[in-house]
Image 1 (cartoon, rainbow, N blue to C red):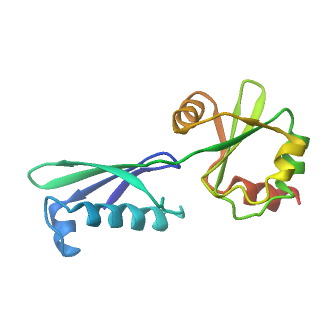
Image 2 (cartoon, helix red, strand yellow; image 1 turned 90 degrees about the horizontal axis):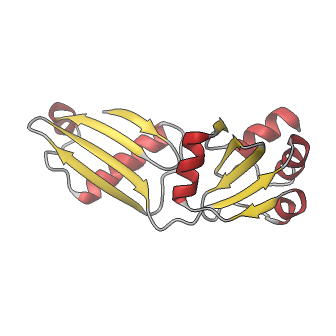
Length: 161
């Protein structure tokens, strides 16, 4: 199994028929097995699997391609004008929050998965909430600079605490 891409917004996994057989599976893969394969690949890559996900399956004669994305997830996003404000907030947050830091248009944007904002008060004190959805995150990740992915708060706390 090769995980072609694992981000907070998408996962792509390509499996050969021989790999599926080794796992006791066959083409086509059931929806439940597809979600388990995605979740296992995310864990192996150090990511927290999504609770709910949409999976697209593309089957070929001797392989399968699974594309997954979170479904029904709200995205919390906070913007910070400068590094000092960002660090002030990060040092007050729960370190294991699932978070990504993006630099775009002169601002730091800190994205959180659903339920992963920890205590939100410091975010409002140091920055401002920005209306975002999965599409906003994908756009900013593509056109901005992803500075820290997956565990941004933890990384900020490790280097600046």
